Length: 207
Image (cartoon, rainbow, N blue to C red; front, side, top):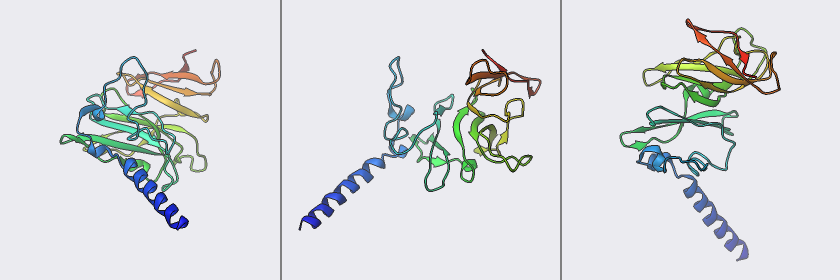
């Protein structure tokens, strides 16, 4: 009897946990995931929906019109970090899904350009020119219809042999990112690369 009672309690707990963890985005029908827009007090973003206790999370990026959200987490079933997406379509938020280009290769720390037409992210996927070495590099992809083009790595003036992380882009596509490369004035410097005449210039530390 004690064993049966324990199993019943365990089953009720598991069922309750499963239902609560299925608080999916598709149930939300208001802008900004139905949340109160942020003020000056930091708060956990979308607890139980995007911010969960299951995995470590990377930065969240939201499209300029507020109808798309991208974020990254670990994924045990796939074996690498993936970038998730949810969109506000026909009056409700879609069920989260993994964007295509991180199903087979990892993706982390997504960041949309200010116009929402390009996505930047970190990945240690292999380069065709250097298929033997994995390193955390910055990749980007432009929009293609309702999806994204095949991601491409940013040029060597940005992606050095050292690690790169946490990318941000301004209205002119100038890029800011963290690195320990040659030219650092501290350790984890913020570097800047100007986008001019269709190409990125040599990255420099902001000091």
